[in-house]
Amino acid sequence: MSKKAMKKAAKAERYQAFKLERRAREKQIQKEKRRIKAQKRAAGELDDSAELEEKARKRQKMSGFGGKVVLDLAFDELMSEKEINSLCSQLAYTYSANRNASYPFTLLCTSLNGRTRDRLEAINDGAYRRWSHTEWWDDCYDCLWSSSPGASSSTAGSIEEIGSTQTELDTKKQSVIYLTADSGEEIEELKPDEIYIIGALVDRNRYKSLTLDKANKQFIRHARLPIGKYISSLPTRKVLTVNQVFEIMLNWVETRNWEEAFNSIIPKRKFLDQGKKGKGRKD
Ligand code: SAH
Image (cartoon, rainbow, N blue to C red):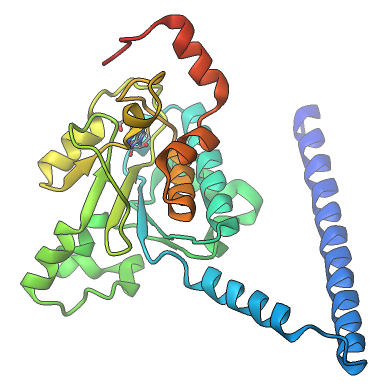
């Protein structure tokens, strides 16, 4: 084993030990909390209304916003090894943001293949397979509305569309919107009955209009986030990362306010950079 590999293995081992320790500590804290609660309840000191409120909040969180976000992983071959690693980190940020959100989306990761799959398998013993609120499909998202026999194969087994009529499938396709910075359309609000696709791609904008062309070819609706409308210092067609787009969506669902959502997710230095470079860039 090389020195570097040994270092890496030692680090992984330390991390694993730390994780187990942290879990045990968290369990202990929960146990203590339960004990105190039971004591209070026995003494008649528990405030029922606060408890009910907490329960309602939890229920609300579990039910989520109702919307679905598709992460389209079909661009594996267009990325370098480094970009794939970067994409996988973005996927992990996306999942983590969703897990901690007050109103999570259902995540559907489609066309899982190639080096992206290998990389995900390698991280933390394939932890991605255990992500909550997340489905992984080998198939493309077009299974959602395609009635071809192959469409419901393998990992796409849980699609509720199996057995739907053609009209239902057409309506489903109508509810799909590919999010892309290059669209001429601007999204105004997110709706729980719409399905939003984000291109799972890190390309430093090497492939211009790639996702827009894909949406047009498949006759899917497309739209960009309304950035220019709310943040005058940024170009209308500002290209963001996968997790930034997703986190802005989560934030909008919570606040119903695009300006706040952009401001809380896009790093402040981006605003300043744009100011320095002057207006009229790209758009
Ligand atoms: N050249 C790529 C850019 C990838 S950025 C392309 O053709 O899409 C990663 C993804 O984030 C995009 O595919 C898109 O789905 C989403 N995205 C990035 N910026 C966006 C914006 N301003 N509005 C809507 N979606 C955006």
